[in-house]
Every structure is written in structure tokens, then in C-alpha cells.
Image (cartoon, rainbow, N blue to C red; front, top):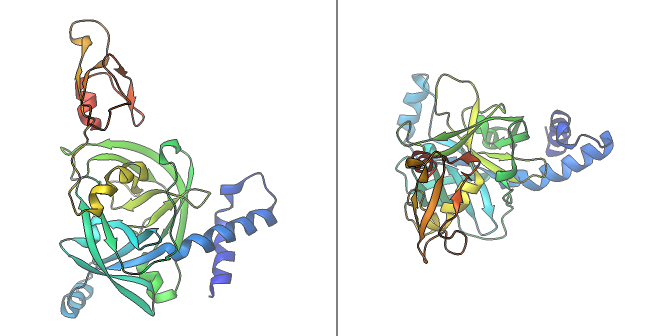
Length: 300
């Protein structure tokens, strides 16, 4: 199947992105979007010995040494899932069966379970960030990934579709992941980790990650507004600090009936400088209500 036929096929399955338009306009618009963004999906492979790979195949184990990545900048910055990288400092980046580059693992964030890779060169196709803060439960998304080595085997990006089914706030006490985590009905299969969850405009709204629970069949991902906060650290090879607002707070509710958290001081050099001030009440952060110091601690 060539790319033209491939895009024609997938356009039928994801037409719900553009309800309200004629079928001809829908298909033409989808073709333009997918043709623009699918080249930004790459395969990521952790170099392992042939012997180890053959042993895993023989044992029927799911090989965890390959997955997906998303080019987010024309200079070759790539986001992927930390589950693929493990302890590797170098990985293979598969742009096509005939084009495999060496990628340097520049940064890792163990809170969000993501990694940042850099390949040499410039003018790469990339997927722009969308506004993940506006995404609601029930919104449609599509997952673009290197499922089952589809880039190497079939010269194509695999696309599945679904909706955002739920949002969870995960703390470090529950799992290695720490932050907001989305679940989606878009199918996530071996090789999908590190793939792009995009909206109807072809913008990146989340990065696909392994499920945090084995008791659900849903896929999951980290929203990009969280990734954007840690990117400056990842580019410098620094483990991003856990959430910090640069404020001190008090809870008047401890001595009054009100369930609220109030800003007491603001660090003039902190992230909240110029945004918050003494006396402000914190109502919610990232969509999660703040009624107590415990709520604030969980969000951060």
C-alpha cells in the first residue's frame, strides 16, 4: 500500500474530527493534516544484542526495546517514552526503513516518564504543540505511532482513533508517574509508547505512555502542557524538580469554616512571581480543585 492509498483509507476512520463539513472537504482536509504530520513520527529502538533479541522472541516475550517518538522541533528534538530508553544514552531513530540515525538521549523526567532525544541535522518535519488544557473528556483524538515496527515493516505510521475517556491525578505514592495522566480509547499496542496523541488540527496534545494499571484495556498519555514545563530542564540534561510554585501558603480553613488555600508569600524569583500575590486564594490548579494543603501537595 502506498502513502496515497494509506491516507485515503485512514481518512474514512477519523472523519468525526470534522463533523459539519461535506465528505469531500473532510477527506481533503484530513489528507493535508496527516500528510503534514505523519513524517514527524519516528521509530525508537534501544540497541540490544542480537542474541538477547532472539532469546526474547523465542520465549514469546514482548520486546520492550522499540517504540515511537515525536519530532517536536525542526532541529531534531524528539519526545518519547522513558519505558523505551531504560538506561541507554544512545538510541536508533528510524525515520524510514532506509534512514536510521543515531540519537542522543539528552534528558529524562522520571516524574512524567518521558525522555528527550536529539538527532543531528535540521529542517525536520515536526508536530506543533496544541493547547492540552482545553481538552475535555469526550474530545476526539488520534494516536500516531510506530506500532509493531510499522515504519520498518510497512513504511507507514499506524493511526488509531478514540476519545479522552478520563483524567487522573497520579502521585508518587501510587506509581513512578507523578502528574496528570489521561486515559484514551484510542488503541495503544506494542510499539505505540512514545507516539503522538493529536487533536483534529493535527496538534500534539499528549504523548502515549504505558498503562499505569494492568487492570484496564485503555491507553494513556501525558498532556503536553506538563511536558512544556519540563522541556527547558530536559534540554540541559537536568532531572526536572517536582512541582514548585515559589510561594508559601496558609489554610484559613484550619481556623475557619472556609475550605481554601491562601497565598501568604511569593518568591520574587519563583515561577509565580508577577502572577500571584499575597492574599490570593488558590481555587484550582490544572483543573483540580484546591480545598486544602493536601490537595495542593498532590497537584504539585
